[in-house]
Structure formats: C-alpha cells, structure tokens
Amino acid sequence: MTTTIGAEEEFFLVRTGDRTGDRAVEPAGSRVVARARRTVGDLVSGEFHQGQLEVRTPPCEESGELHRHLAAVRRAAHEACRAEGLGLCATGTPVIGGAGARVLGDHPRYRAGVRQFGTLLDDFTVCAVHVHVHVPDREVAVLTANHLRPWLPLLIAMSANSPFFEGRDTGYASWRTVVRGRFPALSAPPYVDSLADYERLTAALEESEAMLDATIPFWDVRPNPRVPTLEIRVMDVPSDVADTAALTALVR
Image (cartoon, rainbow, N blue to C red; front, side, top):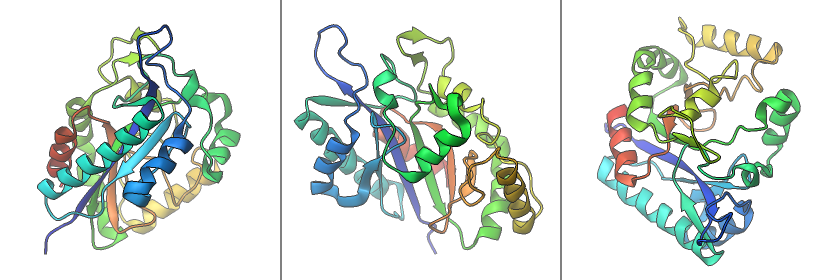
C-alpha cells in the first residue's frame, strides 16, 4: 500500500508597490482567506496572526500529485491576495516590518497561547512548511519520530529561508529556527520508549505549563492529533513550490 503524504505551507501577506512602507506585512488574513475559499474551500485557512495564511493539500499518493495540489492552492491564495492589493510572501520570518503580522488570529488556541506565554510571543511571527506522512497508528508514529530526530538538522539546512527579520540581516540562514528555540517545547521531541511513555511526558509538560496542550505538542515531529499522520514541522516554508514537493518526498 502506498504511504500517503500531504503538506501545509504558511505565508505572509505583504503590501505591494514601491512606496515607503510597502512590502511590509499586512493584517488582512480574514479577508484573503474568505476570497480564496471561494476557489479551494477549506484548503486555505487563517494562522496565528492576521498577517499570515496557510494552504494545504489533500492526502496524495505521489509527489507529482502533491506538487500539482500545492501549485493550485498557492495560486488561489495569490489571486485572493492580489484582489486585496496584496502579495503572498514565502519566507520563514517577516523580511520588512513584522508588526502588522501581530494582530492575533481568531482561534481560541491562539488566545490561550498568549495568556500562557505572554511577552515571549511578542515577536513570534514565523512561517513553516509542515509535512504529513500517513502512519498506521500513534504507537508507530512516536517510534518513527525517534528515528527522524538525527535528520532534523539536515531538513532545517535544506529548507532554510529566513535570513531576514524586520529589515535586518540576522546572519542566520534560518532565524525562524532561532526564534522557535526560545520555547521549552518547540524543538526536537525527546526519545521515548512507547506511546505510553510519550503520553506521560506530554501530560507532565502540560501540567508544568511548558506545553499548552498535551494533545497538540509543538515539537518538530509529532503524531498529528486529528489525522493518522506523523507531522514534521521543523522546516522553513520554501520560496519554490517544487522545493516543498521535493522535501515532502525526501521526508517520506
């Protein structure tokens, strides 16, 4: 049986034009998502901040199919942006002016995160590509995550696409990775012996308030809480849709 794959890509919404202040992030996520959904339905959604949106593919059996779906949802998002006088920017961190991205998205989990982590989230404005690979059950997922841990730095290096942050060259190929490293549970998951071991650990982290929700950890690799996949979350969003398809194939 073919192991299905899927991908989610996050983008910044930016002003277009040549005036001072253009190319900065614009908090227009709700408007753009509403327009894009006329074409692709729930394959586009809002994100943590209103200056972002996310597109996703359905489950795919091979990378060419995934590439076609990604190109179609990117195109729908781009056209929705253009109708609002905006552009779609694929980068892991805002290149110019991130303050406009920090209007919080409309989701209870986002508000809960701000209540729990407070100022730590003030400049947490990042975009990623998340790769999903079908697994038969959660036990297999957590054990497979053990074996992926040594390869995560390679995936970061291959996808690095966030050297700039709010007009500065950070000197890092992936500033997004540095930003995520500030959090106690936004990195590689610990090695676990079993699903039961994993669930004990996540429950303890939630109780200590190092993690928001034991069922939805933000580790670089996790069993997805809603669909039967292992989700790899370590990578910056690539500029080229073909790179996302290639990374997805490599992860599988």
